[in-house]
Length: 148
Image 1 (cartoon, one colour):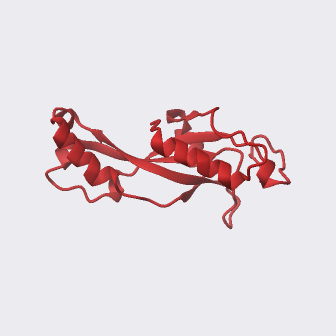
Image 2 (cartoon, rainbow, N blue to C red):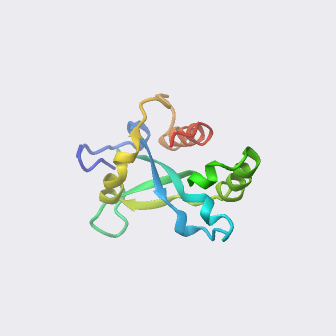
């Protein structure tokens, strides 16, 4: 595995450094938003964690990132922001409590929207911890510390 830009082959995935980024994708079309809620919701974003140092070729030449689902975030309209806390909470519970799976997404597509995200320098620095465990630790961190 390697980052296409760095082009440094990694022989051992467990020692590969993690370049953690978080990105938000518009997922509004994935929801069946109730007619009464539509004027209150601007959009719903799916927030994902990915490692820029790890790309996969899914039976094609274009490399893809493995995006690890963190959570959904509801963005309210001006009308939605005027709701009391109970009304807002009802919307958040109704739409943010959904779960999604992890996905592959082409590197150029992620890089095109990456400007809306940022790199996170903190996280897991355990020398003897396997890569999957470090990524899981980052996933848990970002799920409980919403960044976008």
